[in-house]
Length: 111
Image 1 (cartoon, rainbow, N blue to C red):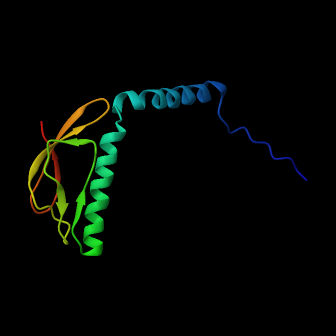
Image 2: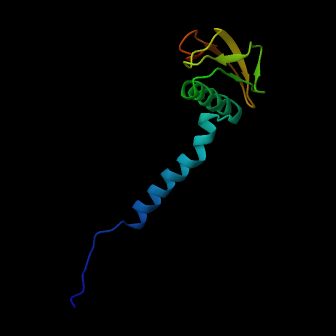
Image 3: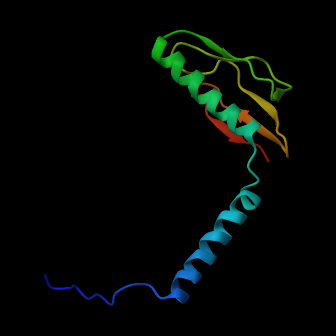
């Protein structure tokens, strides 16, 4: 059998540069995004409850401990909300104001 000789590959310098860039991205991503699990949990629960209301053709209500200053968020059997309101999400690192639009149930971040 003939030996295959291949000179294609990465040099040590190229490999170190790639690892340096990847390491920098991994270390700085959580700092730049300021990720907050409480807010993420609310969005997941909101989307799941809205989908469940559409799927089961029943009314559902969100009960979440991260929300303050709000009327109960309830979805009708079409997945639309019944009360338009502005809610305050109490996250670990920050608080966010969200406005719920009547009808479609879309969320808008208030400034």
